[in-house]
Image (cartoon, rainbow, N blue to C red; front, side, top):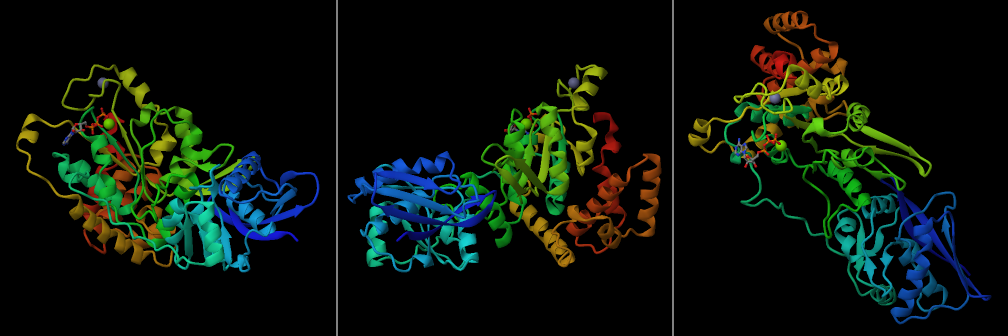
Amino acid sequence: MAVKLNTSSFLGIEGSIVSVEVDIERGLPSFNIVGLADTSVKESKERVKASIINSGFEFPVKKIVVNLAPADMKKAGSLFDLPIAIGILISTGQIKFYDWEKFLILGELSLSGNLNKVRGVLPITLEGIKNHIKNFIVPLENAEECSSIKGSNCYAFENLKQIVYFIKYRDLLPYKHKKMLSKSSHTSPDFSDVFGQESCKRALEVAAAGNHNIIMVGPPGSGKTMMAKRVPTILPDLSYEKSLEVTKIYSVTGNLSINEGLITKPPFRNPHHTSTTISLVGGGSNLMPGEISLAHNGILFLDEILEFKKNVLEVLRQPLEEKKIIINRASGRVSFPCNFMTIMATNPCPCGNFASKKHCTCTEYERRRYISKLSSPIIDRIDLFTFVNSLDFKDIQNYKKSEFSKLIRERVERARKIQKKRFKNQGIYCNSEMNSILIKEYCKLNKKSTEILEKVYSKYNLTTRAYSKILKISRTIADLDNSACINESHLIEALCYRKFINEDFI
Ligand SMILES: Nc1ncnc2c1ncn2[C@@H]1O[C@H](COP(=O)(O)OP(=O)(O)OP(=O)(O)O)[C@@H](O)[C@H]1O
Ligand SMILES: [Mg+2]
Ligand SMILES: [Zn+2]
């Protein structure tokens, strides 16, 4: 009789239950795996055979057929090694496993019978729980990930032998999830390390508070990269739901470090300007998420934005708008979330000194050509523009330590709380996500502010998109000020973050 065990696979970032059936019959010795298994699964035969023998068990010299069901779903990866090996041990009577249907088993075997870490354990655990399977047998290196899900009993092992003993004697309690302590220390970056640049710090605070996209333009060495890298320190921690969304993505890409449970801090991704389209947006033959999805619920930092290839930047347009990316390939169709805050940084011209305190050696033509690489659809999606100037000797010399990230984060958290309350029935979290109806409802201006905006609108021939952005940013500034209404000072500050004010440099 065929033996059946539960395991699971994943497509994109969603898990799906797979059953492994092992049938052993008399006949010419052979070992076949059927059920739309790709080459990575077929290779499992050699690992399973060697690990059974090297763990001191017997490998049957018979006709072995393994069926992975449902047969119409593509299966890839090495996580089927373990259920196949256990299935063979049960079929040959070397172990008995009566309550197999209560367990979900996965793991990669090495030739010596040791268990190796696999990808996708988090979505798989979630799928198991959804299907009322609470017990999981996983490699020890995946234990944190599996046990971090509420309601899971994770049994984690180092090798095949230990699992066989566990199935026989049940001598183990579920793995206890260790809540990770936050890793901050004296040496971690902090905004208080940054001399001066108060206006840029403020712009970053506003961007962080409302989850707005921002660009920093300035000469080399003025601290753009330094400040961008400190933005995660002023963002609030992720909620349980958001943290699950992020960890799922890191789990399927294998980016979760060993013994890392749920990711609770917003991710910060800093792809290099030589990145390819696929590494940025995802895809490839195995349908992996790219940098924009790894930045989900966190920050995507595009440093030296003008050095990116134009076609690479263009593919960002749609995900920036839709907050998700759908990838169609012969191997399937998947959707990855990518709701992130974008920080961009660039020099204003090829020599880097235009509009700064130093002398620019570029011609008008060189400068225009340089900046035109930033196409208008991308510019349209930037909410805040800020210029970072180089510091004078005096500024550095007289500098007193400025605000710590913790203080800024407290303000950002307060503003985020106001937004969460405001949008609790709207399915959004931040001001940047407001549509035109919500803008109408929540961004009402008083008489004086309306007059100012009207003047600016007609003088600079603003687009509707720019108009909405100014209102959304004004709303965030008012939230930081804990003010229910948007007054003139909020609006004027928001206007300062528009590029037309400084038409000169971009
Ligand atoms: N405002 C500042 N306060 C403290 N240190 C600074 C400041 N600005 C620059 N620095 C120092 O200069 C180094 C270079 O700064 P950073 O790389 O952030 O400049 P940048 O604006 O990104 O330059 P580039 O345009 O060349 O990329 C930093 O690592 C830091 O040590
Ligand atoms: Mg830099
Ligand atoms: Zn220049």
